[in-house]
Image 1 (cartoon, helix red, strand yellow):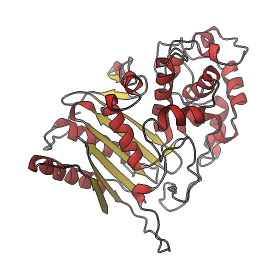
Image 2 (cartoon, helix red, strand yellow; image 1 turned 60 degrees about the vertical axis):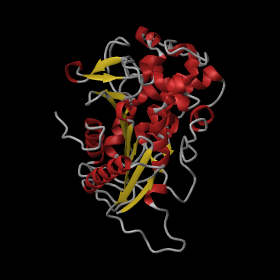
Image 3 (tube, rainbow, N blue to C red; image 1 turned 30 degrees about the horizontal axis):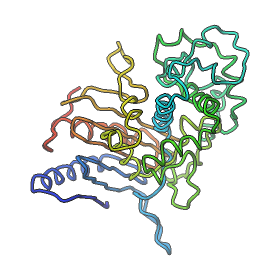
Length: 369
């Protein structure tokens, strides 16, 4: 286990709080089983970052990159970046959240009337009525679980598939998680702005927020985390998301994810203050008996002293979690190079954030169901 911390000038009370956070992070880290794990907390401007894992780094010259400096596949956490970009384009008048999707796509034959009713907001909030993935990806996913079917999907195929897909329900009436829907935001934003999605994301979100280690795709560096299959030993192939880049292709570092969380905690300190606030506004109720709330992009759960917002992501060999609690100024980032039932990364990180939210003074409390 290794620990790194960034601390400004502190008081005795600050030090007590930091020690409490450190102990909590260490306990949570011990509950996550994976070859590589990074668990990081930002709390009132102080950062605590700890790493561990079952993988023994090879003895090489130069030494291997520390776990907390690697670039990780963040999977569906990418969606929060894409929707923040959408909110920024809406704030600057490039488009409106309630524009019909069809208005920002090439002319398509849309035989199903509900397809023309789908708006950009519906896509962002998973209420467009589209399936989780296109139907023609399902057989391949079952037969070849570690082969990315997304890789063969270019934008032209994505749009053709959308044109022939009948929405499952009238847009805006039900919540149904959809990679397919969020993927369509990328070509829509590109057409509305005249700029491709990777360039848009880099120039309008990543650079303004100072996310120098975050890229809309592979980082093209030897410091990339290597994912593992469920056995914890077999390397998993890197994800190629094809036209689904906007819903799962971003790579990032633990430090950048904390910076991203801090931007949401203090939007006024960034160039994207209004979009960062917009993506935190509750939009709808979802889940069992509509007990859960969803913002434009974040899950929004009740917690002591105020709600906490979070999202997770997974690829073939990696998992991520990012959440924040505005009332206590707390953010939690968790990353691991394994996806599997025994990893427990998401639930452990969620419980850590809840515990920190429960007691802003640092003492904490048990999570109540």
